[in-house]
Image (cartoon, rainbow over the protein chains, first blue to last red):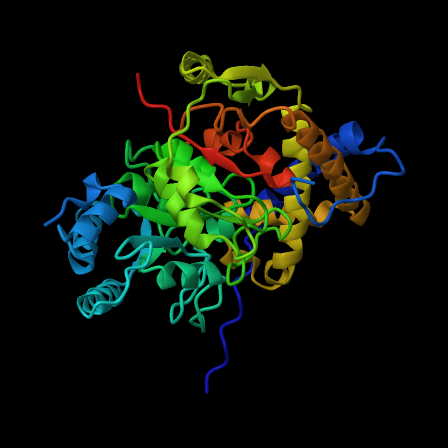
Length: 54
Length: 412
């Protein structure tokens, strides 16, 4: 029996691109959190199930 | 042989019922059109011609023995390759996906089959329904049949392209942030994102549990109604006869969400205005609707999608990151940076946005807004591709769960 081929790892360039993408996404997330999520009223409960017609 | 490209689903049903064509003839015509056109469009990742012809033959034989014809008797339907078809692997356009064949049809596919549809093959998508058109995957991305240099929309790209190119009269897609409506818009056909939970997601690989919807793409609104009538869950009320009966617009109150058009290109706004003018001329009363800003919806949807999709894929991202295409990997990994509080607060904002949307819609019978704010971009322009997923007004209704159909405005 031959050993299974180990999964390919990301190259240095791919890792750098991924880190850049993650940093960009995080910046956008933080901007959205600051603008829309920081001042939600405490009494507002999350919606996990949705009936759009109430 | 019937010119499959010329028939809508509703027209094909008339031809089938009149005997002008049988199920085998229509299926063969679709297979021939796929053979002729798909090498340029890449709509399909797998066409099961033998199985499709066998399904059609069984339908024709059953009819010859006097069996009742189902509501979609003999209609070839393509299925996005994120939805299970019994005996075929669900590959999600990814090298990462499990190669084991599905043991049974997804519930929505089973409903179509029971109604007499012929399942003809699997269509291309963005990897795991996210990212964008990619050239580093086992299959090429689907292209827009109107101009193959252009993006067909996504993530249900192949389903939109296959219907628009006349390869099939109907296809299934999934829609988490607009993925049925984007290809319908970009390819000039029609698509429906039904109300949340109205169509079962059983047997559909998830992208984001609380945002995912399954919907049909076709070439006429009547076709969408016929498909939805079969696809819907048993507890969902729908009156097909009423849906197919033209109703006067005189006195009908239609909401217009103009705020969602703020970043639209002038040509797109002009096309929307033409549609509004037609509706006004037909007697509708157009009512401006005040809604929260589009960016609140799209940002909220993005955070929820990022968190839920990262939860689904994080094990594979840890162990097989290099097997993902770069676009999907970058999208999926973005959820790693979110906190639990970010996710919960997004769901809290979602409740507020849903409540405000429901209140805005309470005074009208239906509402209109743009789908895409810009025309389809080139498929080989990474900057334009990255931007196009934010230049849309589709995500709001994934958040709120409201049904939304996407209709094409014809060229001038």
